[in-house]
Image (cartoon, rainbow, N blue to C red; front, side):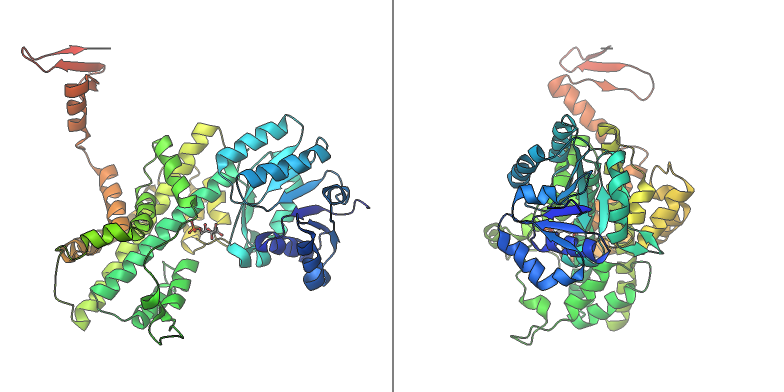
Length: 479
Ligand code: 6PG
């Protein structure tokens, strides 16, 4: 077998197959391998003429087909399967070779694998690939971790196959070891929040404005032309405009209202809890999915009293729709700011040097949360690399100020009507928490000191204190 392939892809499920096709279409010689050889043969039969593929039916032939330094991309199930495939190929590689994991691995697994393979002189690169099957074929957003040396070798290839916005590739080196998979995980967390906020906006327009799904589809199409323009808003209009071919009813009305989740949003929340990073909008979106699936619990609550209010007039509905747009936009800014924060908190924790402007730049295209809005974030970081919060950028701050009244009215209206808006509410509560002069956390400290002698600090002098709460009550400095 001549070593002619610039890269190899093992694991030819739809994502792996489409990435291999994308690479071949971009002029790279691509070795292809799959545990069951039938998939390799099928790729060659159907897509073999799209570029230069080198089919290999054994791991040894697959590795032998790779030019040095070898670049071997694995596209298999996360977890044990990935570890098994690494164990199968690593012994066949030499120092300086690269293994790229393009699956959706947990960043902690990627950090572990990178350290173990680095000890053998092999680069392990965790690459978050976003954009689904179509993105993998036509141009994904690729968030690449691992060493900068590996990116020097892989970067041109990934940038060539990635989505492009304004001629710029939506692929970049994010940071060392698990940084790429971490940022992909946060992308998915933001995706959960984005989708939940859109769903809550839909629910309000349906239940309060009294619009039909088709009318709401038109609203989303209109919003897609403005500051909310994004892939998720675009597809929402399509989903809401769709009529179920079986019943002739609006498609949305025949879909079971129990949301699934493969888990990457959950990982974001779990990790943020460990980092002490308040991703409350992402958390509420994740819990909202869980609650929607609790059939028995929902049945127990069903019929219990909630709020009621008369439907709006058509004129009031139009005003309400404008208010929902403000609330959706403001809540989205907060959700993205929370995602930004957890990336910064993780970078500090794990020693990654992550440029948030680069993250925003490569999220502008190819990925699921791609949106015009991300160009604003990219520009904000280009202007001020050390921006502490999106709300530190004047235009975002002005938009949030402009949204204050409608944002609060929408949430109040939903509460009065008994309509759940957990992500809207979490985003507003986060905003109010961070802008508050005094928080009730002071009382928490008093309670904790009372029952657990956990001490507290004072506003008027340094040190930590404990009060003896049983008579005679007295306070003492503990440090
Ligand atoms: C992407 C998508 C992809 C997956 C979602 C859905 O970036 O291409 O986010 O990773 O389709 O994670 O996962 P859930 O089942 O958790 O919604």
